Image (cartoon, rainbow, N blue to C red; front, top):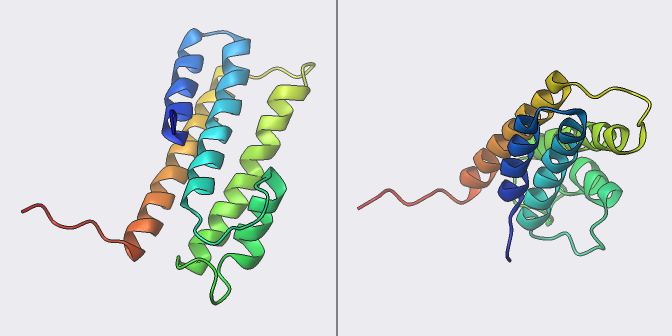
Length: 134
């Protein structure tokens, strides 16, 4: 893969630094897509066509059922809820051009994405601990 979800998040930071509304709007969108791609690449048993809604629904309703994902139920549900909120914000930033998107909105989206990534990393490391350095 040439890019990762983390690359999207780094670009979101650069969009905020641009210091104008189009940068802020793009920061919201890139932050969302960063987490979307990270969770999509982490799920092990999601054998459906990955769309925004199917991934959210899977995380909230099915991922934690026995035989599906090996990860903690509450973390999967939490990630699904966070993804849903971030998607709503992304859609608003992309399509509601009559509404202002501020620097604070953009920074909040980036922080949400960073927290999402941290929770995702913790969830994965609970199941697949990193080996201690020799």
